Picture (tube, rainbow, N blue to C red):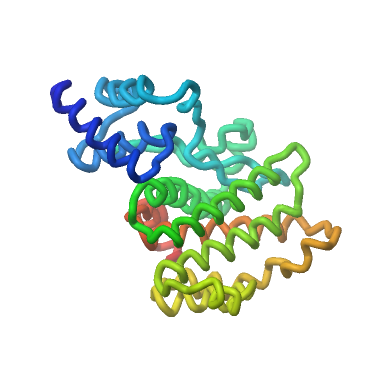
Length: 290
């Protein structure tokens, strides 16, 4: 059991690091708890006295309302003709999470229908893992110096496009034009890798333009990550950039495919630069690799 004096000293040092790194106040308690569990090789539940002490310490040193937060990330899953939010919970240490519980707004009858089908559950599990790895991986990258500043800027822009598109799909009347935001998010995620690995200039990025297949193929070549090659094969499902000037009602099935591909791209990028990767522990090897 760590003493109060040692914990406070640790928090003060951590807070100075977060301040220098520009970590927002609302993200500091969660980042601190995550760092604490890793550094001390322990698992700390939310109701543990240490966790409460860490949160209280930051609450007392933050602007009013700074810690009114929900899920770390809210993805989107399509099932039974509707888009449902996939809420990535705030957890630290070794904690068991029920994937179905992350579909917080899904009625129990529909959730039971999903859970009773092996194929449906497998499809959901693949997407859920991508949401989970991205949610935590993106938080890790934003609160650390794992990426070069310009690449981190691209990551932030891609994240904004992604959550904006997800929000459009979760409206009471889903806006299928979210597919354009999903396309843009994918493009920026890919370019974040190129900026990180090759330090491409704006002029060099303009040469790539909006050619998603070229960008994904280049990412595959320089990182040797197979997922980028798979992404390159599938990017043709996105509409062209010029479609933003059109009043097109894209089929829901197309929008859902774009959603899964963008989430895969986001997860692939964060897995590349963090240790977040739940696939080996959640997805059965006999079902095939991802």
